[in-house]
Length: 549
Ligand code: ADP
Image 1 (cartoon, helix red, strand yellow):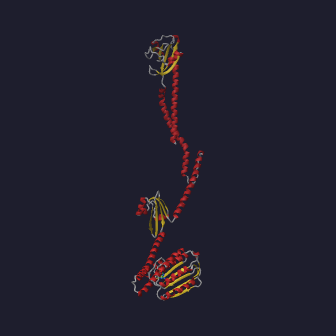
Image 2 (cartoon, helix red, strand yellow):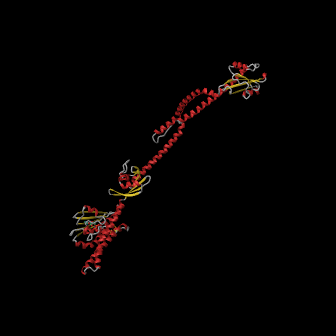
Image 3 (cartoon, rainbow, N blue to C red):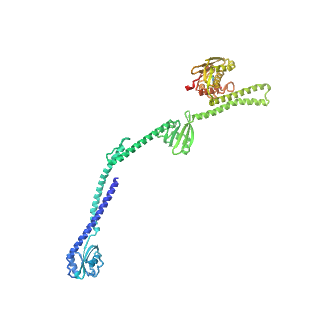
């Protein structure tokens, strides 16, 4: 601004000074011409009109008039005598002053003399007493340019002075104008956010008001942006998925808590996984969107990279879905395996019989084996169907008298109990009722009692206890082989059997307890196992009412 004011001031004043200088030059010049004209008139008054027109007269008159140029001419402008140059005989009729004098009796002209070569002022008079002869007096006259050149040093001094004045004035003026604005700017810079800016200058009050309004508006916007950011961060951080937005391993734009934890992210440090994991590092270099799976501790994660500008990484915990997929595969493998054994033996025996390669006395034995293996296969299929059916069982609950159910079922186990010489103790409270379905409770009781006999010792004891109340409790306790600590945690897994040698003989397929557990979980009942290896096992089901869960 200072510079602009200075330039404007300088331009105006320099132009003014130059214009004035020209104007004064012109005025002085005109004055000079006027003075010269008067001087020439005075000189002319001294000319003796009766004197002869000779060279001597011209020179003598020139001396009287301070050395002015005196030209004496005939009435037609032919030079008779000239005090400056021998131009006798030449005509000066074409000269302006001469022409005017011939026509009007007198004439002036200012011009550069062709004879003398200098700027001259001429005054020519017609002397009627001498037949219209002409007398001309001329004297040197400074030109306008020479006036200006003479004045130039003064003009330059003025210009220098003008520049200095302009500098000082521009400085003072701009300081005076800018100071309030500078003060306002300072106040704006130093004012705490939210505080009002004031000015004592009325001209600046609208600006101050505008600034205050803008500052309030900006303050609101910043607060809103901050709040949005806070909420965004809250949302991102509360997500169980990890999310990271980045340009390169060390240029991370946004990362939520889950991703930061999984990627061991440290601010201003490259993400280790992106540089150390060869597959991910290659993937990032190639810039192609892709998915990779990684395991951290006991969890499996899917890393989905969407490459662009910037890149986005979404980390999803896929532990459950992968476990489900694994468990499905395991389940299929187990089922296939469990089916294979009886099927192979059925097929083998049937082929032998069909080929007539079995002596008649052994056919009956083989047929019994085929029937036994078929029963086993049917049991397996029934167990699998039961196990799977639990998930889709949406049939309504009703009150089942579990005390009665135990009494009904227990008769069916008599042969097995007797076979192993197992003593049965019933400690059943009568009239205990549970909200469920009969077939579900039958499944639970059958499995627990079968195991209590199957894994009991010869001559052991099997105790079935049932107590009522708000939370009826069923315990099936045996004095059998018991379970190790590790087996206690695994017996509820599908197809898990402690002693694999049971498989294919009297043992089950490891589905019984898995079915019990699934039924209890769906009903919200508690299932506990207490066991000491070699001493016996107790399974307890606590029938918690549904509203407790
Ligand atoms: P299975 O049909 O093989 O009995 P379960 O799911 O009922 O399958 O039982 C799983 C495994 O748990 C059994 O193979 C057995 O090793 C163990 N088990 C179950 N009940 C008892 C028990 N009362 N005493 C000792 N071990 C048991």
